[in-house]
Length: 532
Ligand SMILES: CC(=O)SCCNC(=O)CCNC(=O)[C@H](O)C(C)(C)COP(=O)(O)OP(=O)(O)OC[C@H]1O[C@@H](n2cnc3c(N)ncnc32)[C@H](O)[C@@H]1OP(=O)(O)O
Ligand SMILES: O=CC(=O)O
Ligand SMILES: [Mg+2]
Image (cartoon, rainbow, N blue to C red; front, side):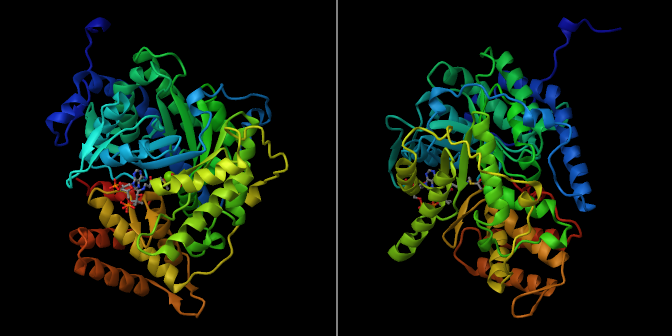
């Protein structure tokens, strides 16, 4: 006999990870019921879209090249714009990014940047504690009560005029195994988004700020449409005005660059811009062309934003956004301040300055920095070349970008130093990630999940798509990789680093990923089974 509808009470999401009493205020029965609703309504669609990614990649592996879609010409050629941009987001000249760690949140809010992108993604290692502590920290940041005292006794609190908060949930591909619904793991994206929205959207909406999000690693307009529907459902469930949740989408996969109009269109009621997520974009170029020997990339240090395929991508993004009334955000230079070496520090800052100058002169409406000391560097450049709050009026009608430019092969060399650096970065970053830290400085560069993906997928591609050789004609082969991995593992084990105990674990994972016949989809997906 059918049970009357009003009697059916569906179970809330179940928590499996270790929690503290403070976590209980985030993982409330109401919040878990809200998460369960999102999962039941949307997870099957998410899984279908992930299967569509696999099917797309299989076509690229068979030789197909990414291209603009034939079925969406009307969207690309149509006359439409995105909804008006809220006042709080009309000037985004400098955005600081960083993990959802308590002290860093306070420092970022106080940094002088217009926006703080609080990151559950590339710069976060998703231990359950990191994710839920991050929610506590964001709740306290939104309520204005966030404070912190360091072990050395330094006290932190938010000053007047903090940066506007935008939250980046995990991408569609990552599960959150510590929260299940009907026995299935939830999507990390829905957990991060859902908990932040549940606890903060009402409070944010009642002020001059709102529930704002950065959406990572999308590949297609259907994935954007899923986010649009998730946000609409959340707005309805939380009694919020339609389209009050705003989104900025990272264009950081190669397939997505061919659907920028479509992605804006799918989210047109709530999208405020696109962002050039250059590091994942380079990773995606590597992954998309993992079987194409004619499109191998040279050393990472040579793949700069000025190389043809990246220049075309950023210029097309600016033109697309401004045609639709949306912001075209720049991305992240990897240099960070260098302590105790003035000349090296000046050189690093000069590189950041040059990167921001290129961005503002190309027509970007703002940019990203990784460190508070870089806020004034980027701001000075944008203030000088962008006196108005944004450059939406810069149409870039001069830009004519075709498919072949977006996928152009990149000239350059593969050096011993580049190979060795990739092994070292992949190892040290993986060790850090497994230990719960998702962003680290290595050789004075910011390394996060996206940059580490470049390192480990380049090694894979050079080894599996060879035979290749260095400029001195020495072969690039597995023996070389194995030797470099042992060397760097040994160095880490022998060092004073708190990550020494993770070295062997990280090395085993990298050895397995590098020797595998197929390039693994995501380092973080493979490593997730071992975290916590
Ligand atoms: C590809 C992408 O997705 S880019 C976006 C993701 N990446 C990021 O967000 C990068 C975030 N940046 C960072 O995590 C850090 O800057 C690192 C790991 C690169 C360097 O960190 P550290 O070596 O600790 O920097 P450093 O010692 O110079 O820090 C000095 C102070 O600035 C703070 N700080 C550094 N970076 C940040 C940041 N991004 N946000 C807020 N505060 C920060 C530190 O907490 C420290 O504070 P304190 O003086 O009060 O103790
Ligand atoms: O998320 C940003 C990127 O560069 O990747
Ligand atoms: Mg990224």
